[in-house]
Image (cartoon, rainbow, N blue to C red; front, side):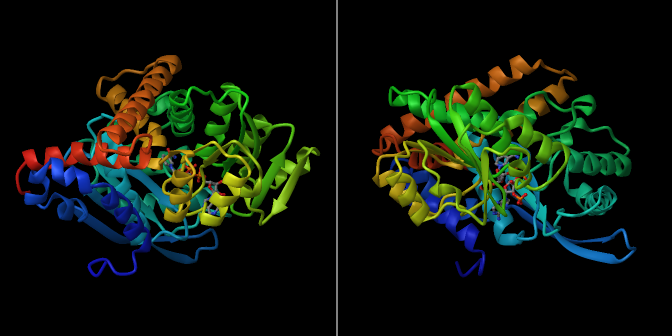
Length: 433
Ligand code: NDP
């Protein structure tokens, strides 16, 4: 805490992992001898830089950007870039720290990192977004590389932004290094099913949690927070597996549609027109828009928080439990507060932590790197099937680990321990570096 003052989200993420690790140090004393826990909490490298750019009025704007290269024991640093005004070092460090264990769980050869900027893309023109991305990459490029650090998207960074960032990287380095970025467009090195992967993967994980309880997602009522990349494709896969999704949201309000969310309409509003989710209620009269509403008050059996960190607190958890929730899976990173997780666990709710449940995005990014390395392009079906297999494996690994370490069915414990043991083992093998 003293070493990283004020970084509250980072403290929260570290505490959650460390709380699970007691029994691991008993089984693997070499981890304690080598101070692996202290090492893993300290990023290998942190880069902070200014990003100057001109807005459409010709006024100079200055933002701050970060890249935290947290751990490369298993492979090149890998993790998204976030554009949101709330971004500061503590957010990027929490995301980078979580990414280490998530990436380990995927079974793919990728280390952990994360980046971002306090740039707010809302209301900015296409030209402003492009100029910002170009200026950011003019510094960031020197820290990246297919074998060094491979970013992707996150909140506020989708295919458009990745295009501008990758384009500037290509221009400055004079290298068409496809494997340096994931989440690219299909015609320029992207992977089929990457856009869908995080949301689909979260639902595959949810389905596995149901199977472990001899139940299924089919026929369940579902609520999904957010209406961005993860939320949209979580809704799509949940619907295709027979769930009825009745609510989604953005940071201004909540849409409740008892008929079931019309996903094509959401895609049109969010992906094509880039409007607010309130527009849904203007188009569809069966829907209600709750300005500043709390989505967790909408009764459901399955809750998928897919927006942002700490969006679901203890009170929300109690409300969900009272309303009969059976399963919660985190599409977002750390959306549930520690208190909420405790309530879910005590109530015996199937709870899939983000590290495990949303790992499908980065896993498919690793599949994109694989395709880039072999100059190949897989079909949607093949890529989705690989994603499904990976999510089934992650679920099995977390479940088995939770049993092995005396907390059967506790996926938080299972994910933290399984991810940590893999990275720590590699760190020990590589000596004191
Ligand atoms: P998007 O920018 O596409 O969507 C984010 C959504 O969450 C929007 O609906 C946004 O609403 C909402 N949101 C963001 N901040 C807040 C806030 N402070 N309060 C309420 N709602 C908010 O991002 P993604 O869908 O890519 O990311 C969502 C989450 O999933 C993040 O936690 C991210 O780290 C995580 N994640 C993403 C992966 C990916 O592949 N994209 C991979 C793994 C995890 P608004 O438009 O109003 O801001």
